[in-house]
Image (cartoon, rainbow, N blue to C red):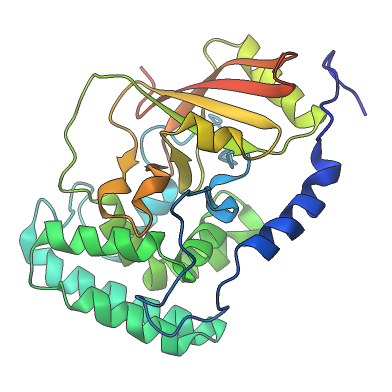
Length: 307
């Protein structure tokens, strides 16, 4: 295994399995909660959930330009499937809200049937339908709460998005668009969003081996090279919490309003979650090893569009 000139940290991924095992022991919760408000383990001291906040970003498989630009083909397919104009979103056209909520609820129930979690899905759908006529702000708050709760939505959505760009998987993910696409569109359509030029720093932890670090090092050499995120990627504003996960810290400088602040309406607000949607572009500024802290640091620069 090449090491790209970096020393090997004393807690590289051979310890990951052991770490995950101990994590499972310390975060006991029922495998199947029967209610959205079911008791979930208290997070007063709030470590981040590894399932959501640990792992290197999944990069677009786009083979032509190497990035999606400002629009993910996944969201383009959702709008095509729902017969929406490119700028047709519920926050701009309130008449779409009840219809979109109903389609999202029906899709959640269908997904629940397919994965053997129909009872759970019906409760999620019922909670979403409660806000159908309450306006886009209330609908979006509920979508955030449901997405950040402990249920199958997160895994189902990201599992589908991972297939985007893979020719062999194209039929599979496109068949999922009518099922999960409406909820994805509602989650993306943040009615509170305001364009800002203020820079923001967010973080994500990962366990990475030398080959992976080398890939980011190579990307950093090309100042004009941009990639894009393929799936919803959870990050945090807390550097301290992100550092506790893995042997690598991603430090992401957000140059434009390309991320979504979920924390005000999250089930776990202390996670300080910022969500990166699919299609957001990034440039690798550096990939370095910090000898004093015995960890890799990868600096990314995020923006919605490539200028």
